[in-house]
Length: 392
Image (tube, rainbow, N blue to C red):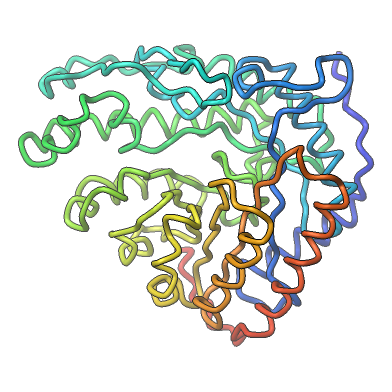
């Protein structure tokens, strides 16, 4: 029997915040640029132990559910505005690799995210014998079980993330010998395209299976991948492409862009993740549909903010993550750096990762400190309806 967890959520307030993000993403005037408080750390509440390692949280549906519910309750009481409850559902980024038979690899550190061990392919001619997997392979059945459970046991004002999927080139990174990944672009491009077509087909099927598991409506999701921010309805698509940090524009055009855009096309213009740097940044809006926002690392992208002011002017957004242990003071300085580099042309929404060493008062005070910068940022923007309609 389904038992929806009671949460003190004001539905009308959530709807107001959703409209705020719709206006923001479409470059309509708002009174502040938001800063997202992303509560991490592995403390739970209730019947289970009070502290969890990352491995415990990723390996257990029950622990992951408890941790997410605890984070929602804490954010609802500490974050005065902008927060839309979202749960992050994941076992790690390597789901597609496990569909192809790769094993999950854990280090000795229980707070180190998992990966894959070894490689599946050490000769590109092997790609023609690779079996297309199904959604019953690897760790996908457990992902679908979690999506169903979270969707059924949380109220509709709590939104789901998709699982952390990666992207076509990211999957090739897991399946291929590392040297082969880069030499294959030149030595056997036909085999690379064959494998990219296969993994893209699988990823598209996987994305749709997620939606079906959660009740069949893409709008139950904040976005189709790991990004925890609620994204407006036209912008739910997402693809990760960390490999594009290490390739040039010619390789990106041939081996990344066509496959990324097949995934983005499922629900229209959406997000791209690359921690940075971004040597192919000027091609992001060449996707059809175009990239609407870049999820990235502040540390590895900050030097490129002036260039993104040109690339995304009046259309795209940056979502820089403070994901390298930045202090409150460093995050405040980083937000101001974004504003000074990007206004009046481009919006940046910083993701501020905080953990359970922060008190409730610390979180609330920090929100208001960021809010003051966000209000200054909004006043500096040129809200003149320049947002180019690239939806296709």
